[in-house]
Length: 206
Image (cartoon, rainbow, N blue to C red; front, side):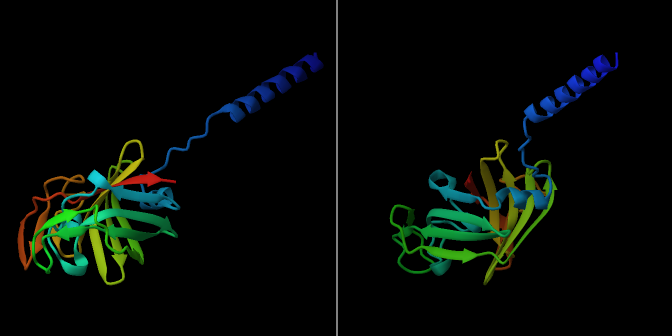
């Protein structure tokens, strides 16, 4: 009787171990906290090209010559290491606008010299749901971007709606989701509704 009881206990225990070993591992990222978001993008490469580049990156038309701050791009790649974002961008050419302040046409197929800069501080706050919206600020040497971000449901893309600091209001999750018509652009001290497209869409790679 004792041998039968011991055999039954051992069989039950082995069955439990077997079930534990065969259970699938849950690799779903936790994007409900700032720490979870930064952990998810750590070591990844985020790339924006083609139709994923908006007409108004950082709130400024890609067709206007703003000198070194022009927003015409062929591609933008961000790599995340140690919680900071290294940005490597290849500017396009604004045709028909040789001087600053002139309006022309952004041609992404005519690349200029690559630009590179790395953030010194990245701040994520007010996360909604599982990364459905969050406020974000990137501090770089000499400038700062602020706005809101969101991950796609399949975690394959990241949308960032960013503006240069002090250049817009209403670009946060409390006002609405990424791309919502809640943004007022501040130019020359005047605030006016922003009617451009500033949402940058990045494909997330390993």
